Image 1: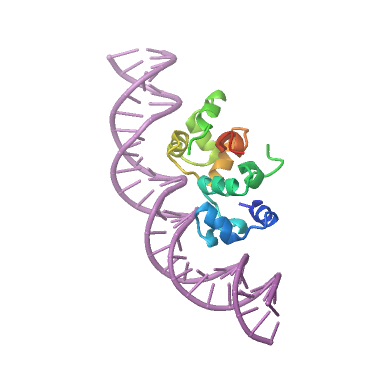
Image 2 (image 1 turned 45 degrees about the horizontal axis):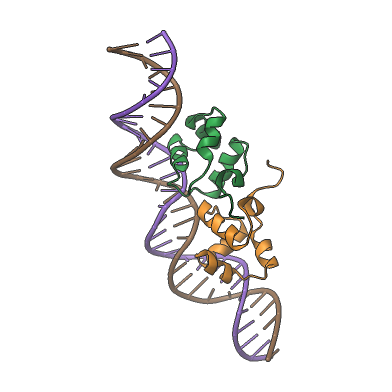
Length: 66
Length: 66
DNA sequence: AAATGATGTAATGTATAAATTACATTTGTA
DNA sequence: TACAAATGTAATTTATACATTACATCATTT
């Protein structure tokens, strides 16, 4: 599941640890999600999107799919 | 995880079984997702969105959150 | 009334998301 | 160069998404 979490987080000058804290998961989980080798739950995706001031589509929807 | 899967599916005159088949999960899983008592994975959300010709935001993003 | 299709839901098993612990590597900075 | 903060990643455990089987209810059709 490729996504745009990492680039968005970095552009906000936020560390993985900080995002993890806001989202309520571990830093490792954020790392795995960013790596894209993971299939996160909807709840986690929503929490990440809120923390980064983005929507689900912004971060997880493949452009050109709609 | 409340969502707009059921209303969208019904408007397309699609049965749970038909959606399940297209998505590659069981009818029960679709039922549970529609019921909203489930926390589906991103992969499943994307597959459902594609099958219903919608995006993640259309089905799973709470309006007024962005 | 009986049969068929769609849906709701419950019990149990399996696969995997996420936590936890831990350590190595990278990057910036004093 | 030495130190610290951030990151990558691996092993193990725990919680839960999803499959499977099964049965009941409701609407439609014959």
